[in-house]
Image (cartoon, rainbow, N blue to C red):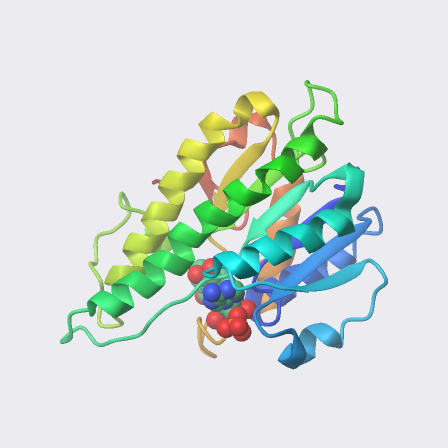
Length: 250
Ligand code: NDP
């Protein structure tokens, strides 16, 4: 079994693009919606040719963009609703350990990585609800309805023994810890609707954010993540995992 529809935010490059390519290998999926802030210049995404793929503009930090996106997405998924929302779009603002992150840098990361995920997920809830209501109450999986947040191991408070490091991860850590709290809280809130919520660290991945020296290719990360998504059930909701579904400490 596969979900009918899947949405990936920030899909024009990096892990988001890797997830789209991996998901398209599943012939059971009927619709994949991939979003980009700038569709015109989303060259790599446009090169992916598949009739199931729908490209829509979305800046997760812009309410006007979210509103227009919601209307278009509703038309694409129709009466089936949306089975899976993958909140992947994220930012890391680099600064050195000698510098304190400015208010602007703190806000940018917390806005994109935390607040916008909350706002977008709440906006899309009616579509997730619609999909969930069409499956038996006993089913709890991505085939019914799920919100999957791409977090980071750096969001773990329990595993933080090294501080912000010379790379200046303070604001990023705060933003992903906030995202994890959202996943936990929202997971409890929507469990009775049959909507699964889980957060994932994709590993250290070769992207613009992860850098060339990172351990994993986008293909390796996406393959592991998608395999884990398929194994999710009621026991996993609200929790936080690595890409191989090993539990991570909040
Ligand atoms: P990239 O920097 O390569 O890509 C980030 C994506 O997010 C781009 O598509 C970007 O769009 C999009 N994005 C940023 N801001 C917005 C916005 N306001 N609205 C819509 N889209 C936006 O990062 P990765 O692919 O590496 O990261 C993907 C996710 O994985 C992030 O949430 C990140 O925190 C997480 N992660 C990554 C790790 C890594 O090692 N790479 C490790 C742990 C977690 P645009 O091109 O327009 O900027």
